[in-house]
Image 1 (cartoon, rainbow, N blue to C red):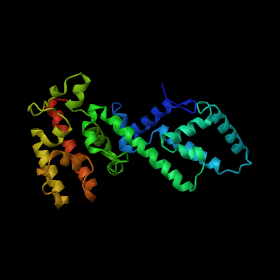
Image 2: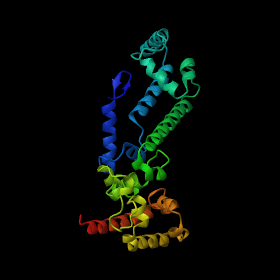
Image 3: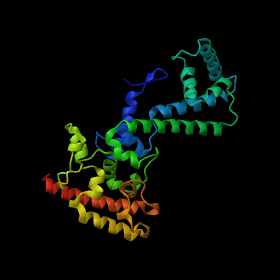
Image 4: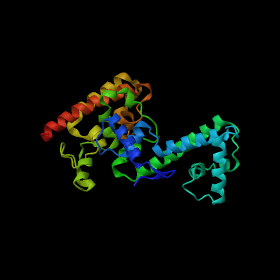
Length: 285
């Protein structure tokens, strides 16, 4: 069931919004909503509606008091207050609630907006902050996002979406935990996490994103080649092989490194392509 806003359900619209994001990224339907939202820096339909409603309310307040729209608003506002602000069918309820949820109820009460630009900017910032907090809480609930949580801390568009458009889906699926590794495929058949070991190197270690990128012994040649290429384009990363694994992951598929992030992404994607071909060959896929 979709949630209501001003008496209208918009659950289906939210689903279409997410589907649009999934198609832009070119990822599997199993990719979580949080990854799609996070990689594209998307605001939810709900947040967008709150912002537009409050912006419209602000414009009504600045309208000539002799205009019909202003008179209707004042009448509806009076009815809403007389009804102890409980009538959800009253347009004012959702405007009041939107402001209340942003801790701006005092603005609703006073209708005193000194600077329109500053006010609507504040509204946008508060909505974004609430959206980001909810997005982080939802990520914490999903085990498959264990790597993604380490790589992603802000709700904003990732640069690689534009920089490596042709192959971005492969990076998104590795970052987001929806991929062909045992850590994900084992979940489909209800294996315990410790049972989802790598079938390529036989080391009895779980085949997760970190294992695939940094540990699996069957990809040593490809990994050495990857690190050598990175060191050639950025001297300050001469020690990349000796850094701790979380830092390595952040450089390779996370925030990147200074102005070399795009080049590093391309190098990593080359590694992923070669390692994946070797993996398929060994598994006869």
